[in-house]
Length: 182
Image (tube, rainbow, N blue to C red; front, side, top):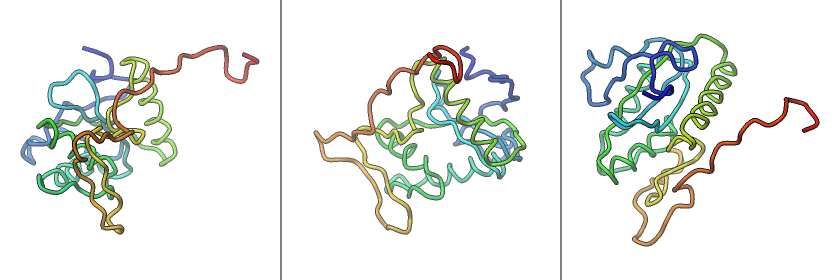
């Protein structure tokens, strides 16, 4: 198993994976406290998304599940910015998802710093970005905007590609020392 899928990745105590199709009882393995979460396609060896929340990780993932239940209409970009991404992947490939969470108490800035660190560490280990962070999106779909705009995304016409799709650039490797002349 790769480190980014382990229960102790980056020194955090990650929960078991909970499928978004599980019952409420089975979904209870996710922390009911603030922290970080990672999402992957069921059984995949790569991550689709890494996120953080100051609310309950379990509640945040329950909300994501709800946004994906309507197969006819892509959800809006808010309140969960990754919901349209997962909807597009499900619509295009039939993918289903599962999440794992880790408790982390800290300020919003500290959670965001740790999220950024996890995204960087994942890029180093995997050699690519997650599929749904950094504005990345399925190449055959356009993303919904915020609910206030009323603009929903969906499948693009055949032959049209979303520039936010495709492969990411490889990770930058460390060079020199912080604040060093090189």
